[in-house]
Length: 136
Image 1 (cartoon, rainbow, N blue to C red):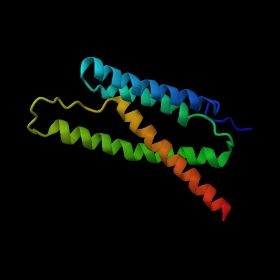
Image 2 (image 1 turned 45 degrees about the horizontal axis):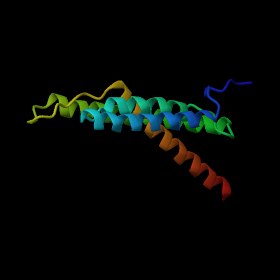
Image 3 (image 1 turned 180 degrees about the vertical axis):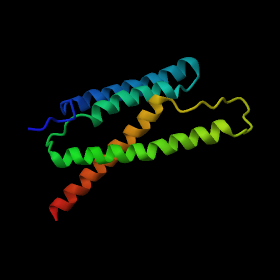
């Protein structure tokens, strides 16, 4: 019997949604309090929440679902890494005129949040495509 690589029960998705909601609320409260948008804080909440959502088992968890999750995660990394690298290269290495704004590099939390958003969206797209193909 093969061990399931996704350690969380499918109920952990609710925890993930709650963490994302708390991160978004905290993001806006910090903006209201300090007047600054802290995207790293937002990305931390998104990252933690998406970890629970993406790495949770599905209600019907079989080899096809695991394969789709792996495919989605692999493609998400392949897409997110060049986006992150290109952003950092363009905005940090070029001598652009910046008035008052300081452009920061993309943090690990932001990279992880981007990767998991792409992976989660792509997984549910692939899963939807499989269910459409199965009905035909």
